[in-house]
Length: 303
Figure (cartoon, rainbow, N blue to C red):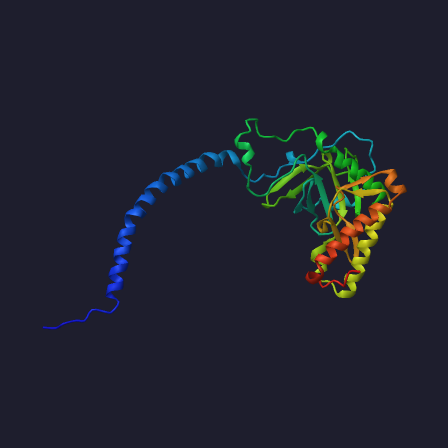
């Protein structure tokens, strides 16, 4: 008859099994108490989700601001007919406008929005207790007409600094009637071009993208061009509403800096007469941005 010796760890295993058996009733009680809570939270989520989760917006010509009654008729752009012969591709989306680039990637058409568009799903818990209907895009562009006025002033005073070619705010005989847009889902939209508000700009390279490939010598030229651009904008009577230097609002054409988003600029004669304070403020913001990106772009030391 064979005998087997029990392992030395047997008492410990026995003790551990006894301990787990003692915890089992506690686990069962905890599970029974937690289960209704989990189910309640799940049910609450299912009830809240349809109300608070807002799906991404879809692009259509209805979200674009239509022509307004204005005396601004300085529209001359013979290139527009050639630009609109082929579909324009989606380039980017901002708070005030949506941009499309030409097929040759040399020009940008920026259309003004009636209200902000969202490309991603978002949560708005305030809608849970807000019983008013969801806001809808209205035909009246009153709320955003201030942006158009700003671009009028910018076109008349900062045409070269913003790479603006033309501003279209009302029906023009020389403008094409229709064009095709490709949105961010690559869907085609045939729009009545001559009935919409838009601007045409030369396409520049995004500032941060350009700095990533420039040599040190080219970086120094571009940084100096940016500083001169900021000074010129202030000297021509424009102040910025931005509280920080927004690099996405600027681009480079070669090593020449241009401001591609002028929606934050406000013109005043007082600013034109006394530009020093605004110049110092914006230059300071620019230097702060430069210091933050020293290692990222290997910038020269900021004095």
